[in-house]
Figure 1 (spheres, rainbow, N blue to C red):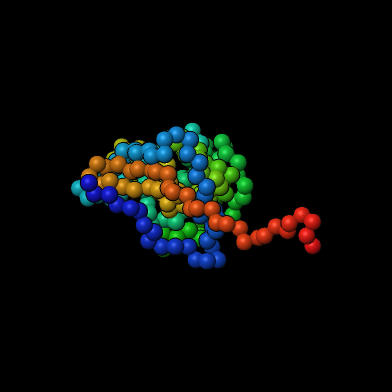
Figure 2 (figure 1 turned 45 degrees about the vertical axis):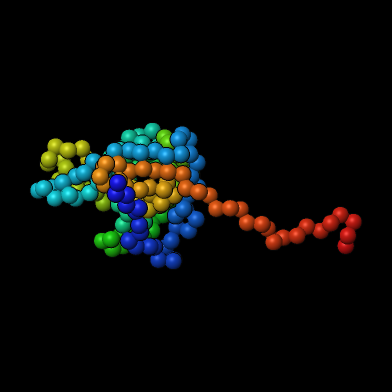
Length: 192
């Protein structure tokens, strides 16, 4: 069995890093391991990318698995359906980094994102037409369009790993760090 752990190809600059939002808290709502089938997209006989079907806030979509993107992207169309079912805490333009470089993009901070098997909170999501050309090519081939890109801010906290032999992606609960003992000492009653 060949398993590939997804790794970051780039990291956000310090002044643009989503901070604690980059690593959302994950609450597992089902089994602590969920394995989903991957679809391989090929053009002219060449492997281009892997796609997984994921539900976000009850809306199902096909997502490119991209460990080179620091943030998860949603197409404008798909984001309207997902955002309508979630609480948007903030929105702004931010620099999103990937293998192809950096790009200023609209982002929204969601209070939480329900994937069915796990809930993440809070989550930074980029929105826009970054998949326009890919989706146009898929439409010409009469294949379904992509709803977005699963980036590192979902893949890492969900413990994502690929099994290329089986064409699957597994999301698993990661061990939580041991709580550290507080260095704060409490004053004993009656002592001054």
